[in-house]
Image (cartoon, rainbow, N blue to C red):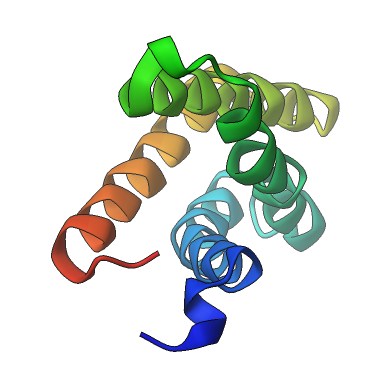
Length: 115
């Protein structure tokens, strides 16, 4: 693995681009092609999930506890974003889209150890 991918920024960039590749097409469908709403949904939450949650979650929560807390944050944050932007059933869609990217990310990590 390259030094860049091993860096925190490189790993985040891979994770962010992977998240966007999964979430943006789904959000585009849900928002009827509104690019700004679709791209900004996970752009607003992903850096916090990636950098803040690992630093703030108690070690006693373990990896899966931290992942669960971060995913709840992402769903709630993206629900608020979608509601502000007039998307119907915002909680349902934020949950579905984040579940898709979380499962995809966990499979990517398990299969290729990236990021």
